[in-house]
Amino acid sequence: MGIYEELGVRRIINANARWTALGGSKMPEPVLAAMNEASGAYVDMHELQRAVGHRIAELTRNEGAFITTGAAAGLVVSVLAAMNRGDLTTIAQAIEGRTPARHEVVIHRAHRIPYDPAVRLAGARMVEIGNALQTFPWELEAAIGEATAAVLFVAGEHLAHAALSLVQTVEIAHARGVPVIVDAAAQLPPPENLWRFTRELGADLAVFSGGKDLRGPQASGLIVGAAEWIEACRVNGSPYQRLARPMKAGKEEMIGLLAAIKVYLAVDHAARAAWFEATVQDWIDAVAGLPGVAASRQFPDEAGQPAPRAHIAVDPAIVGLTGADLHRRLWEGEPGIAVALAGPNAVSLSPTVLDGDDPAIVGRRLREILAPAAVAV
Ligand SMILES: *Cc1c(COP(=O)(O)O)cnc(C)c1O
Image (cartoon, rainbow, N blue to C red; front, side, top):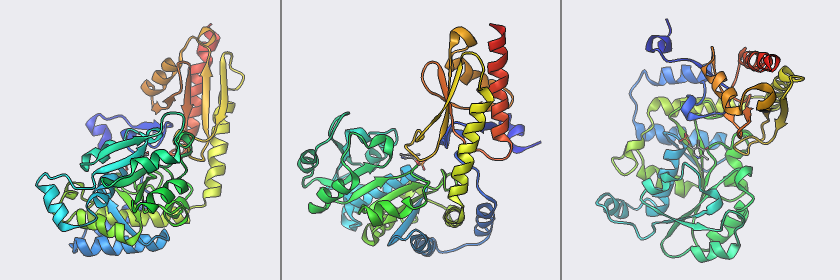
């Protein structure tokens, strides 16, 4: 009996997205082997953090890198670094409950996302600019003052339409001596994004999830960027018993993330993209011709990423199922399949986290659920 079966926990086929709530990702063999080896010895964790950071910085063409327990933790550490700039007096005062002089983080209203409570956890106050439709450069200029610690920019095509560009944001912030932190947690692929935001677009720090497309340890995250800001992250972080100590990455996470990045940079991403397209097409073909069912390709995906999804709409009057019914039938079936609800009468499926026979099982289940219902009407 497997570990999950013994606990009575169902295994799920994840055709939704790389959600933490569904276990994130599966680590490749070299990552597991590296973590296993890492766990077999004691090391100086300061030395390890520096060495792994140095190696990851080289691999990702950045000046520096720091490993955390996830991208959300990376946001906390980055904001702390921006607030106290690694100054020990400011850190000591913050530990005693004093608010640092720089305690505001400017964020586009269009960039408010469910992960931004990390900014509050660091003790900063969010100052919003712009609105749901647009943002002007003067709004960013006006929002930056003596209390500004950083600008937090959330990357992604899906959030870009009502915000300034990253280049414009960096230009305005840097002219006022303020760093820009990019939340790029789910902005992989393409792998080039590991250096694009920092080296090409000028951001000071960029934060990535280790447990999403990188397929590193679930509880790992990566901050890359300018040497001075990475150093400020390090001063705040574990193993120091300072503000970010609760977000410690272990030696296994550090070594595992390094291994994952090596694997990721060696992947044939063009072949992978072709496989995504073929899988989405297979799902569309699986339901083609069924009465009351309309399937199409969606692009980009829910995170604004260059990956396709299959959108499957049902006409309840013909199929006898709403989108929510289809969503539930897939989830409650055997095996359980997670898809995204995409409006009252549609679901949407991603191939990006699947492997092996799973895509074919998903296609078969879709047909099983949708075909007999169609016939029964
Ligand atoms: C997933 C995600 C996070 C959180 O990342 P974790 O590694 O799970 O902590 C933060 N920001 C965005 C935009 C994300 O997609």
